[in-house]
Length: 152
View: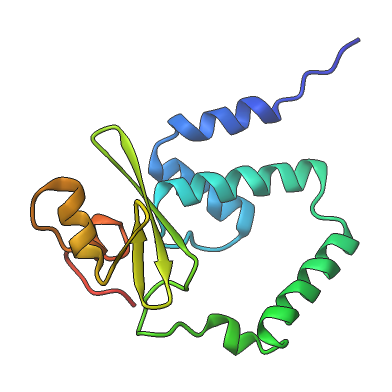
């Protein structure tokens, strides 16, 4: 007798599920309200949580290693790991990815601005303008801010 693993089918179904269904799954799997992040984030976290519950999570030694690496970065100060300079500006090294007209655009946050296609820029709006040829709010273009409200 062969057993059929339903997990791959469940993971594939996440891609076509309606957003309200994803949010309902989130409530079931995490016992909390879903965060206000984009659909891709919900899909990836739901996929991970589904597999974690069925196959098991990270090994304890892996968790300890990750905690040690985190302490090396922030000295064990959890508040420091959450501090962002420049009022909500993404942390240096963050990669912002946006698909525009079928082409993936990747911007890296640097200490003094942003880098796109190997060139430094002071603002995301300048990069969005270079990509689209029109004026954009760079924060909205890269999905860091909803055009109707300010970020938290």
